[in-house]
Image 1 (cartoon, rainbow, N blue to C red):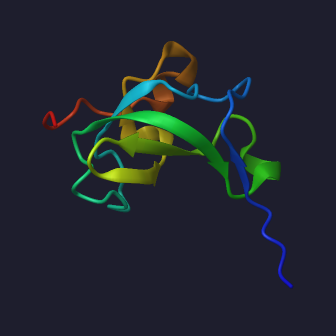
Image 2: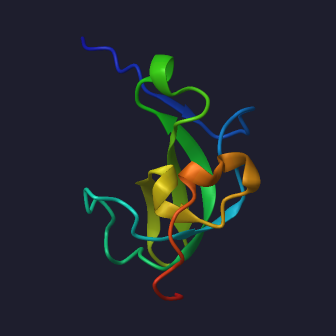
Image 3: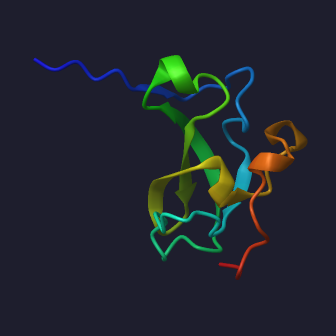
Length: 101
């Protein structure tokens, strides 16, 4: 049996760039083009923090699970989200949204 080291957290984590329940906007700031185009420009609510490698990512570098009404949930990098509070730091803030949903 392979053990999955991922950590999925649904409560606030001290030192994380966002809080559970915060509203964010999904923007394209990723070179990987990893965003499902249906989510671009949409606003959603942070529902979880996902640490694929907790030893390296915890607490400041999670993937962020966002729920968008009518579309569902997906994971995003911090740089793919706008509307982040000051605690996320200027280096993590994304570009302005391309369009509103």
